[in-house]
Length: 265
Image: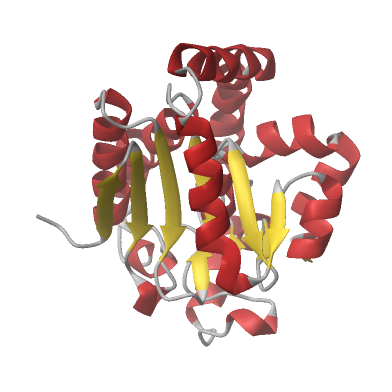
């Protein structure tokens, strides 16, 4: 059994932890596959009413797709990986039937931000930073962020974030309506559990009905498919490959504004 994802189940709540703290919980193949399997099991488990997802280590919720893993694979391998692993993961994360809460501290970037946006509630600590830096590497955010953020904060602010790649603080994300609750870092877990307990105490047919109705209004699937088409054009362009080469020469330093661990799809 893989240990890149840890799971605890208690009183109707499944607590899922991304467990690659040494890589700031970047999403590599193993983590994608294991997390997709676990989220599927949780959604099918009649004893689980709410899923809570968090990142180990405190430094990051998740910094996105692991770029180091991508550097030495051929285009046809990358194409197959994206089609069979990455995009099905994000689509499945958005099409769950049970509520999910994201408990975010530290960096929440690229594909990690998109994972958080697949949740129904986001609890953020004051240290949290959110961002979509994909354009720096010649890509677009293709795991659902453009679709979700456009609906949450509108097209102008979504384009500004994705076009510039700038990071926003937890305070700014909360003021925009991206974050449901903003609390001190050491209270994130407790707030997430308290919120999950409130959900478990309600009639679950109604809980799932609310989620299904709102998700239907969002109309995610069609837009997600269009994002994949655009992303595929970008991914195999010479410009994207040149940007990835520049990435390979960088040091791992998220605080510098460039993250040399993840953030690529």
